[in-house]
Length: 252
Image (cartoon, rainbow, N blue to C red):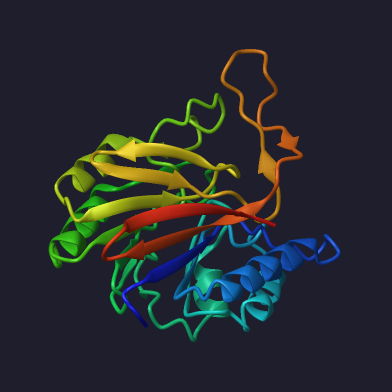
């Protein structure tokens, strides 16, 4: 691998078994594009399946068997940690403890994945314990540029629904990030649309869903989370030592 690093962030795949294979086909389209762009790493940032069902995880396992690059999983609010562990035993990076948080160390850019889902809830929470884990994990390598990935947006999107079901008490997350200037990007999903924000010094990027897009409600009376005709897609994050980061929406 040259100095260039390409991360394919694929989010909110919502794999189902009752949609005539549509969600799997969308994921496979994203994989094909990531392969064309020679992605170095594929990260699925949560809501891997739609209803936490084992047969959905089985369909997901089959769909990702031909990943275009080393592939890493993380949970979203539609996921079940125990079923992820059971269905993907070959993913040895997944820890055995309560949370599926880990660091990816083998690339020019370090990627730290934070599990902040709350079983049975749509919103996310960064617990004090997970905040401490994140702080210690980031402190372990202050010299290497780092991406921090989570499922829920850790900044206000100004959407009337998604700010209610985003990362609650995100001030704690922002405080931890503020202590680590090597964090160059924060990436997440959940909102099913592209959005950009700021977490302390770090630009933050919400990836779209591969399955469908949600509209935006910023004023009372506007439809809440309507499905729209906007193009589903994924994000390609590119870094070079000379040019730094650029992030691209890749439509499906």
